Every structure is written in structure tokens, then in C-alpha cells.
Image (cartoon, rainbow, N blue to C red; front, top):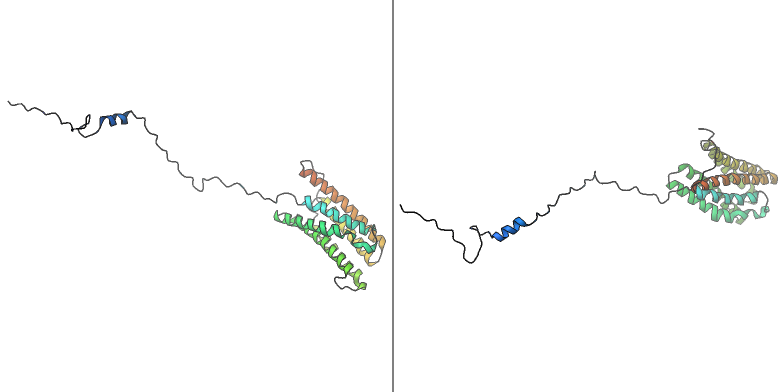
Length: 250
């Protein structure tokens, strides 16, 4: 029989060491010997529900408005007390206006806005009432001194009485609604009521003794206000506050 001889597969001329499929063996070896490349892992994006919440927004106006309102009230009350107690004659009744107008009124307006922004409605009401009291006193004293309102001389006493009645009623109302606060606050406003009542009667009757007595009651108001301010400052500086008493109505 005639044997058929298998011919070797021809090698492509000009390229040595290649396989029949034209794959370079050196490239194959390099591929086998190379270390495996790192596979990038897919990190899922955070959904809106999984995202961490934003930090709370801090209020730049945080704090206690009383740290401004109380001492500035004390300064104005001292000015009124000296005038009413007879430290200066009646002709110099406007002696307390510089302190009341330039310091107390502005400070109480600031404390009122501050308390309102913080949502401290009770404090805002208290500071607003005292701001109106002091600012209107300055307007009354300056207006009567310079005859801004054209009020006849024989009606000046009644004009002063109207001012006293307005604020006596307003602060008496405020005193009644503070009975749910510590009784030291009720005492503070009660002293204002007594002082205004004495000043009203003394003004209508031309009784200087009652007017001077009203001035002394204002000094008692100042003493209670100082006590409240010490309590506030000690608390704000890390100390222990003073006892303010229990509310008259819980």
C-alpha cells in the first residue's frame, strides 16, 4: 500500500515561534505570568434617605435677653427715683432724661427684639412694656419742658396724671398675669404699681411727700431688680442662681 505522509504545518515565513493561529507564544507567556489586575468594585451611590442629615443651624442670637434688659432698666429706674425722691428740684425734672433716653430706652428695645427672635414671648412682653414706659416718659418730660405739644399750663398736671394712669393700669395688668412666674417677679412689678399710685395721688393733690415716697418705692424696685440681675449673672457664668420663690399660682 502507498502510505500517505503527513506534511508538517508550515510556519509563516518571517515570524518565528508562532502558532498556527498566528498567536505569539511570548505574548501568551507574558499573559499567563502577569499578576491579575485588580477588579474595581462598584460602590453604590447613597440615596437621599440614606444620606446623613445636615447639622442643625445654630441661632446667632441665642442667649438670655435679660442680661441686657435688667441692668439697663436699673439705670433708668435710678434716674427716676432720684428725681421723684426730691434729689433735684421740680424745675430739673428732666435730669434723668439722658440716661433714660440714650441708654434705657435703646437697651430695652434691643432686649425686646432679642427676646422676640428667640420666641421668648413673656420676656418680650415685659421688656416691651418697660421700653414703652421709659420712652414715653422721656417724650413727656421733653415735650412739656419745650412745649412741643402746645398743652396749656393749667392742664400740665392732668397731662401728667393721664400718663401715670395709662402705665398704672398697664403694669397692674402685667403684675396680675405674672403670678405664674416666681413671686420675685410679681413683687418687682407690684412695687412699680405702688410707686405709680403714690406718684398719681401726689401729682393730683400737689403733695410732694407722696411724690417723694413714690421715689423711695422706686429704690425698692431697684433693689429687687439688682437681686434678679445677680441671679442671672451667676447662672450665666456657671454658678448657682439665687432662689426666686415659687409662683403664687402653679
